[in-house]
Length: 324
Ligand code: XMP
Image (cartoon, rainbow, N blue to C red; front, side, top):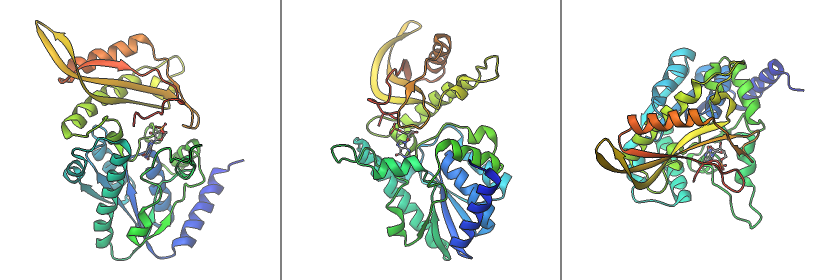
């Protein structure tokens, strides 16, 4: 089957052969895929790689600092951090359609990349953490010929950037990408993090994206993840390990609640946790009621602005994993 040292040696040789002495630019999103791609390419060509880490304001709590610590400080990878929150929020204002939001986020990434790659005069290649399921789902048309979902990290970029495309993970499934990451020396907890979509919280805030919503969602999501990680069974596995993806979703509807003597009228957060092998189909996770209760109490008590928490019990199909 799959021999990891051989695979790495071959991938490294192939990357070196492909890019020669050219410089490569890679968009680091903080997710598993682009992180593993960065580590692999850095292994192959070292300082010929420059990563651009775009903070679109739709990342998880404290994610930006964690990415910089892992890559710039620990691995010595060249990383340019760009805070583009205002730019993204500005362009997303008033936009409610999910695909329109994805397109805007994808387009703004191209914008930021054009600016950054313009500064890197010698960059000839654009590296991306595209994995096999992305390739199928984006290229694959539904039965009626409609694109299922447009993944912003597949296609579109090279034409406008005038860069050649380097996608070393294109043939790998998620579990293979994770094993590769560990073998390349990335921290286990990072590599076994749940995947995070390129558009980030942009597809987890239903309808119009606002910074205020993102700030509430980030805090609710961090509580959920924290509680999932804090449950360990006899084998040492937590509910975080036992789920493939878990996150909070912001619903821009208000409902009535009571707090002390007062009436509240605040937003709703939905929790989503799924188990899946390939992300093409998924079951909702049967999380213990005590755990759900703890998460709900903490979110409502700690995140002012949220007064109701619901749990998503939909499978894929017919629902998708993300809500948009
Ligand atoms: P769905 O929601 O289609 O998600 O069931 C399947 C997997 O893909 C991720 N996903 C995305 N990843 N850009 C990405 O990079 C996207 O636009 C995107 N949409 C969904 C999702 O998080 C899940 O892991």
